[in-house]
Image (cartoon, rainbow, N blue to C red; front, side, top):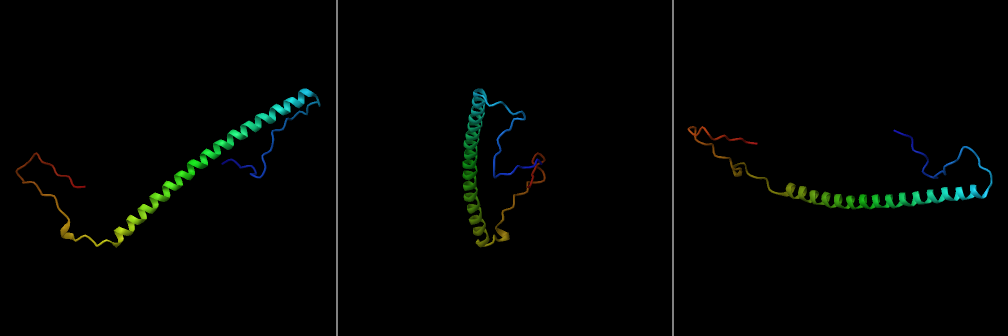
Length: 104
């Protein structure tokens, strides 16, 4: 696993070589900041879409869990089936060699 950086602050990318204070350097910094802002906005949209997908999946799971719990309660409260009520398949006659019966 890779270590996760602190979630409290997103650090800007730092150049190793300091630049001279010129107009071109200022425009380069503006360009870099605009690119970072655009990237972060796209990431935020992506995270919001993922959050919405997760939220909708959680809602579906809640509905399924509720339905299965109700089904389990109904099966628990239902009267048990009598052993004689189970229908057994008829065994074919011994002279019918082409018939094969498989029970699962």
